[in-house]
Amino acid sequence: MDDSQNTSFENLGLGPSDVAFQEALRGAQEGAVHAQSNVALFYATGTGVQQDYSEALKWWRRAGEQGDVEAEYQIGNLYSNGWGVPRDPYEAAKYFRIAAEKGHASAQFNLGGQYGRGEGVPLDQDQAYFWFDRAAGGYQERIDSGWDNFKKYRDDAIRQRRRARIAGRRRRRRLPGNWRSSCTRPRCGSRRSRAW
Image 1 (tube, rainbow, N blue to C red):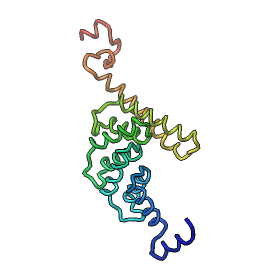
Image 2: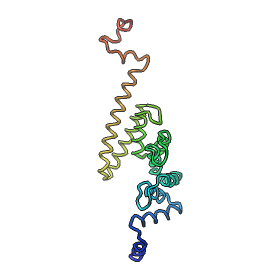
Image 3: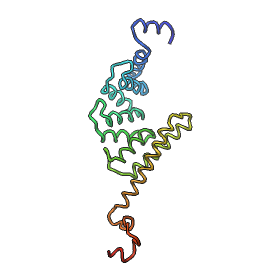
Image 4: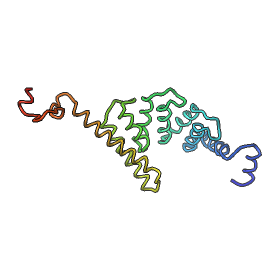
């Protein structure tokens, strides 16, 4: 941006974030996916514009319809937290799944958490383990690319994956007909203990 443009924006009382919002809005209205996602982020954070989650949702939906993975993840976040929309774990899981299947590590992590809690999806520790494992791999790829700040997220995904594996084992031990793994008496499995 040259100095004459910068001066004209300053004369209008617009700061750098206001200018960035106006530029992103122009691109978003022309149908640029990345610009639509940026406009949504401006609205969600209240940067350069009044915070408005319903406007953010509108722009993320437009970007999501064009296949923007980050937009689909952010829509899941809005529904998961109840920001600007009624809290709906089923809708959150739907959007997290869309983004997770496209390789978005944070969406994979959140979907794993929903399976681990049975929130919006059936309680399933095997699915939780699967999604936490994928998230850990996705975060590791970012770390390998030089994004060291993702180490915390990777470590958290590994911790959650471990918890899901343990919870899955415990659940399988309690399944009906699985007498051998649920028996706590000595000599479990002998004829005498089965008749007891």
